[in-house]
Length: 431
Image (cartoon, rainbow, N blue to C red; front, side):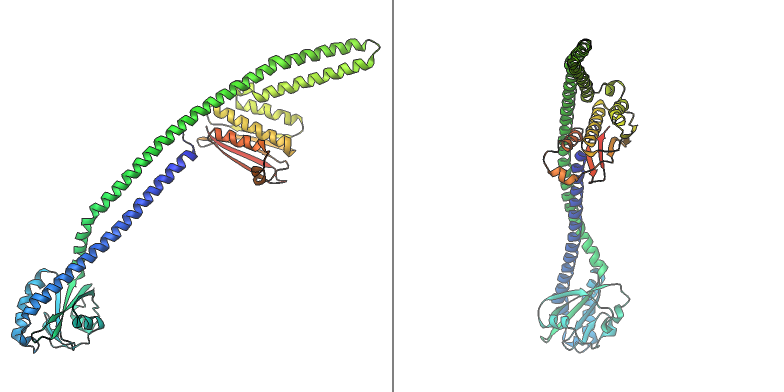
């Protein structure tokens, strides 16, 4: 069974929305996990710096450190040798309140004086740890200028005489990034698990929707086949009743009236003969009209000679009435009888509407293949009408019939018209 576009579209939209939701959740989860990993890695560096300041630096800051005593500097070198070698620590500095560097692992900075910025002054004045990207263009960082990016962390530490000093540590930001990546990868299984669970739920819902749509389509197809079969049977019965019943009776009546008119014509009552002859002509006209109606109700050529022959018969009365006609039939090799009947009925109803209401001088019918669909187009150059107004107004049975016919075959119907511009009816249905 081929699904209609109306059946596929909700499923496609559902899957696209599901995939978009999963993608958004995934991106948000990755960004949040990465940010959380970086924050946690920086927090670890801050804790390490605070631990170094309160234990190693505070213990090694002897009295002579503030005076530049080489022995005090050597003791600080020994105390910080291990952290500098193992923790990703690249540079350490100890400052006084007036901006003098009393210790640095790079002894070239010893005794140098630089102005403390606002954050450094705040850190030395109160407890707390501040971390930021280091400004390597500052004079006090000239020996670290060859590094790509450093994380600068500083906190206050008590000096040997009770004065507050500023301990400043520089870390390679790549080390921080590695730590963040390790922490981030701990979140990845959680994020992936949530994504996979969400996608599994979406797939489950999509599968359920597919099954329900398929069952609905199959039920609709079954009901459509039953409705079309019942309609064809009823049309066939009505056509047969007309042909074998009232048409035959009227034909007999017309013959009898014609005979009576001939007999009366040999007598003196000429008026009676004229009335009988008129009645005979009216009866023959009614026989012709009923036979035409029977063919319209159930065209025998549709099943016997095919769609093209039935459409030729449909346009024949228009040609006899002086209307220019054109017919193009190029249908797919495989077309079900139900589709063939729907195409004929839509063409029939469109032609009927055109001749009844449009007064056209030309009518064309085109039935062609459009991929897996059959495209039927009926166009006329008649009066045309306002489609919007006609669709909302009551009493336009012809438009309702056309739409119902297309809907019964799971097709799409489009009507293009405007006052004075003719009318084009286009239907696309599965072959």
